[in-house]
Amino acid sequence: MDDFSINPASTALVLIDLQNGNMARELAPYSSQQVLGSCVSLAQEMRGRGGMVVFVRVLLNELQMPPSDAPLHAPGAPPPPPDASQFAPEAGVEATDVVIVKRQWGAFHATELDQLLRRRGIQTIVLGGIVTNIGVESTARAAHDLGYSLVFVEDAMSGITAEAHDFACKNTFRIMGKVRSTAHVIDALQAGTGDA
Image (tube, rainbow, N blue to C red):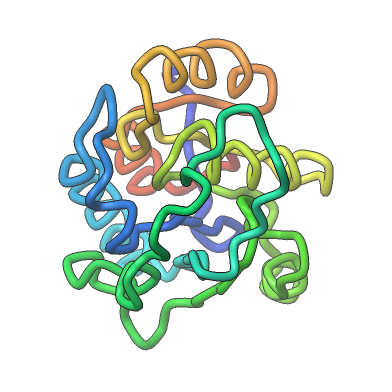
């Protein structure tokens, strides 16, 4: 891990679903506020180094929800309030950031994300957000299929359960890319001389 560095010029920070509806969720092992704080720190560092920052949000009232054994939203439950799909104000989305709107778990399907990344010459995606084992993992799987290098910021994401988060970070994500802490990623950005 000591030789880990990130070249901001070819890297995008992609932050998943830091929106009001998710900020109200009970998460583990990190609270939504802890995740948000880590994501804001990463975004500030990335912007300061000239890197690309992407905020993704899902339109909860248009989210695809085919039948399942354990639906995220109980059948017949009232629809989410209109502001549930808006970014949390504390996320600090800036005018220079890219905003992607989606209608499914992952950020690539039926969006312009891949095209925007390729136009910028992005080779590496640093991922964080809510929820680890849903939106983050779905985005990561598509990114892996598309050939991007991946860095998962373990403490800048959280799961519906700690067990689900830990399984993804200790097993799935380590096969697909590199799992690091917020502090480690910020150090790598500051080193900025190599590729992730």
